Image (cartoon, rainbow, N blue to C red):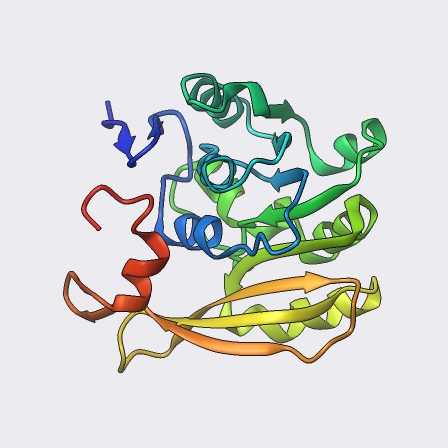
Length: 237
């Protein structure tokens, strides 16, 4: 059985989740802006619950909801929520995004999603992992149109996607009235290509703030920026 992953203020059990904890989720949980002091937060496709837990640590938001369609991941997410210090503020729904939209009238001040994004037909031999990774289970257009309904007027939506998908996502976002206010390009090391884009969207059209984050200077030698971003969470930072 895979060991739990211990962070400074909470522990994640992930033995039943197809998608294990990775850099993307931690980046998104640490990077998402709390400038508008959200009272309500939604994590779409919660997996282990890592991002919602990071946001519970970072905010005093009364409502932190999550949705997860995979039954094993949902049960594990609930377990991780219940064993945390913030159990009274965290709630996970076992539902698809379409079902959730029909049931909920709530508007959220912050929505986050680390979406499944391997649009190529790849198979790892593990079907639940493949569903979690391939965006046919949650296409960008469905994700963004849902976000535009669930997001409060002052709210923001933060996500992390492959850099090569950025143009498509921004085009789809503009169709539903969502515009980029902040984009961070992520490189593994100074000489590697841009691998990911962290994107923050809102209903306001304003000048987009761009910056770049490099994770490592050398093997296991993290940059000051990455340490600053993640040191409240990782035990060894």
